Structures are given as structure tokens and as C-alpha cells.
Image 1 (cartoon, rainbow, N blue to C red):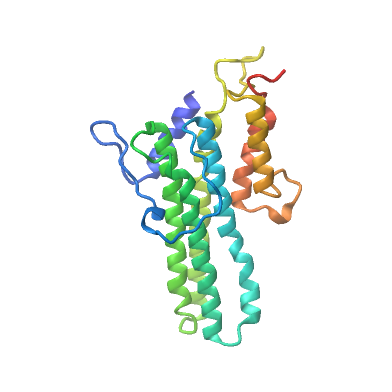
Image 2 (cartoon, one colour):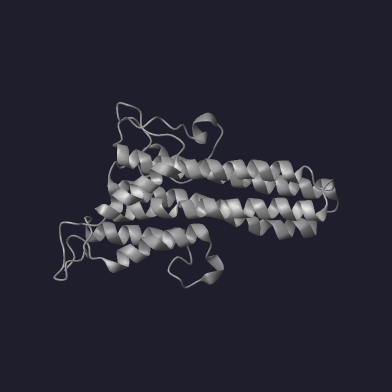
Length: 253
């Protein structure tokens, strides 16, 4: 439990605000609320429980993985472009598609960013949403940079691109404590083994298998068997398997 408290404090420091005097977590509006045309193809998991939040965060990560994979389209755009206008058009398309993926990544978390949601789950959801806002802001910077192609020196281009990549990596790593808090909430800290360690979950075997199966289905490579698919969102999803494979379910023999 001390570990959970420490991680929650770390999450609190990630956000640029604190609870108000009544102890109520302020509303943090998602980008999806402002985009009526946004089309997302995965049905969000909205069960208001620790397991429901674990599913929602996994769904969110799958959209973030889609955004991260957009970078694989860039080499094709570079080789296919016939002029600077064509190149800029393709790069802007890729970046804007990435932003839409990050917007979709906010949707599964929206159900846990409601006044009726308990403060801990809201803090977790809002921390993840905040990181997605940062990703979208970086895409906006990339769009502005793309529009200046041809007017910058190679040194200026390298400096801006490397700065954005460093910031992108920091955003991904800021999600590690978010994932850890969610996974720790699935542990049953009231059932210790003979060595005094936690080795049980507070979910059933069927629920455990469904969650693990979802990780493998949505994230090829999360089990460590396909390095070509390993990126930061997939690594974060693989943390689910570390927990699930290392703990027995509540009703598991």
C-alpha cells in the first residue's frame, strides 16, 4: 500500500494543478469532447472498477501504439514525394493522423474522468489524458516545423527534431507510474503467501485470462516474441503480462 501512495503522489506532481479545498479533483476536459467528427473504432470499457480502468488504459495504449506506428509511414513519404509540396502534404497527413489516434486514446479514459468517479481513478485517468494532450501538442509543433521545411538549415532541422524526440520519450516514460498504479490496484494485498509476499490478484481466473488475452491481441510483441513490434506503448502493455503471469487469480488453484 505504501508503494501505491508513493506512486499516486508522483502522479499528482505530474499534473499542473492540485485538488481544491473541498478535496474534489477538478474536471480535466479531454480533446475528444471538442471534436464531434472524431471516429474511433474500439468500444471503450466503462465498468467503474479497478479492472475496468485497467481495460480502459489498455485500450488507450492501443490507440497510442497506432499513433507511434505512424512514423513507419515517413520513409515511404520521403521516397514517393516528387517535390517539396508533395512531401509537406504527406508529412502533415501523417502527423494529423497521429493526433487523431491520440484523441481516440483519450476516449476510453473519459468514463473515469467524471465527477462520480472516485478521486484515485480520476487522478489516474487525468494523468494519462494529460500525457496525451502533450503528445498532441508535439504533433502540432511538428506540423509547424513541417511547414517551414526548405527554409531551415540542416543544423536547425536536426536541433528541432531531436528536441521533439527527447520530449516525446519523456512523455512516454511519464506513463510508467500510471501503469504501475493501475496494476498494483489489481493485487490482493490481504492475501500473502508463506513468505509474506503478495502473489494473488483480486480478479477471477476468467478475468485474468481475458485481460492477458487482450494484451496479446492488441499488442503483437508484448510477450517479447516479436521485437519488430516493440515500441514504447507495447512495452507499457507488456507490464500487464509481467503482473498477470507472476500472480495467481483470486480463484486460481
